Length: 429
Image (cartoon, rainbow, N blue to C red):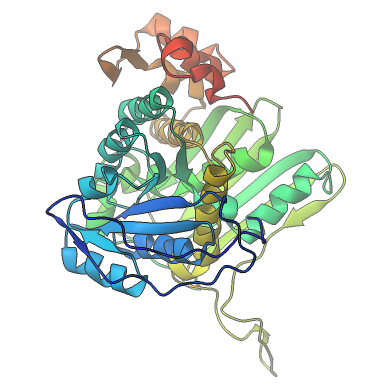
């Protein structure tokens, strides 16, 4: 973000509907350099939960954006957030955010089941969209939502925040600059401090969709190549109650190998419990060097004693603390893309590919075999009425399995992809 951008004033927007309410104007932030022609992004936020407040705080700190309205079904939460961050309007209805006449971009921080519908409504209203992952709860809805944004000509960002974590971002920088040479192996581990409640796991899509999806995306991000196939296994060692669930929801531990078009592989292990805190590290072995990240700690203090030498405290044990800076940076990155008309820094298509990878991982774990991503792509059929998943007959499955470039298979199975929805650009890297 340009350091010379002028500081802006959060001013009250005009009321536009009976369900939105106004608050007093925010204090004026004096412009440091004065730039009246500078574009300002007017933002609306849907959702005043933990994630919504993190992004609202980041927007409030950004010199070239201002939030005009926030919504939440429990309107008292929206009102409290509006007062805390000097947002002029609040509402219980997400449609008030989407249809606000002065809003340029919508931040969707609502529960996952609402994402696709809100994305499509915002696209129809001509708003650019920042959406917490996932874009949708299934593959057809994800594709339809992306297509609607393409058709409307609006930007869509998938919030896969680890790409913006300073540690992971430094590893990517080292690869891009050639510091490590050509990547040979990418290793990632992701272990949560404690398993989530049973009700969270039930219906959450399983360990590959709700947890490993971040690592799958990061492996692709670091490798700089498109994935071809995947081998995954899953097991349960911590919370035996989840074994009554189906598919990947019954796993709390998983191991994954992803094979890429450049002939290299990424190795991933995930587990829902690491009693010492968040354990989320990356390692890249290259032809010139190796680079790895460490965990994040509340401080850098180290204890030296007769029976212990090491960090005085355990790593962060709450994802909001661990990734606070990443959430801020992804918000600022999208605002920069809007202000300066750059491509979305983590597109809807990036989210789609991560979803396809997680679906294929689940199939692999269940069927205990290598699964080509083209198999998942081939199961999607789209027409003018939308998209759906179909069962592949034996011949269609064999044809899909012969495809190394699953990206091409995706483009083959989406009718009118280039004319209607810009699929020609979807997987360019």
